[in-house]
Length: 353
Image (cartoon, rainbow, N blue to C red):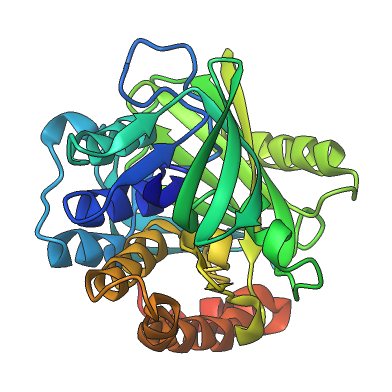
């Protein structure tokens, strides 16, 4: 019998386990093997591996510091913005930590208290309600196991099974597919490139240098000639001088894009959602690590006061995330409406040479 079962050990799940692991009996499960860096079971999530200023602020608020072996070259202080729709280009100063995302996740897991029962190589299957809580079922190294718990926490990302199980009529966020390819590259590129093109997507695409690699990614609408549009993006950027040779790997993931505050949903009864499973992700940039760390901190603070009534307390604390999402949605038209973006970029406001 556990007090809390956390499904998913990305930044939200592992940070929550780190914060509550000494107070409660916790089971943490994840499909990846995050304790063995040589494991082949490190599913490649389509993440650019950039720690944005909001995420840096949350790292500081948690009293943590990033180990240097997690960082990769180059560190990035500028965004090259290419508007293919309007044939415009600008450079803007921004500060990102360029990092190895798998190492970052393993680092967070390494700080989880030893008393937490960690089950990696595990796939969550289902749960049922029982007296005083829930019984969950999951596959661990291919074997089905059941466990009882008072609380379930869904930290299982955009395609959350937990969220779908507790609210089938949910007002879901817009769903995108992120495709990202890694290419060998010895070209020095001291900036993160953001690409806007309505022919490709009403969201955005990116190019990120990372050690001896170049990452090309795009957030695309599913079932709308996804691969055709991705290959068109690659063709257009090649014509601009980008070189995408010697592909190393391809990654993919779903991304939520919350357009309404009602799409942020933190759970019901004794089932809570954190991070992207709750719909907490930037609708303007798809940055999610800061929201994962913040929502898991708020849930941990709510659980510190006891399990009874924790979800009501969590709902109160999450209000500033709702306000942040509102502000990001108000900001989005300046980035994603072609005419407004054209006006902003032509003005040169806040751009650098």
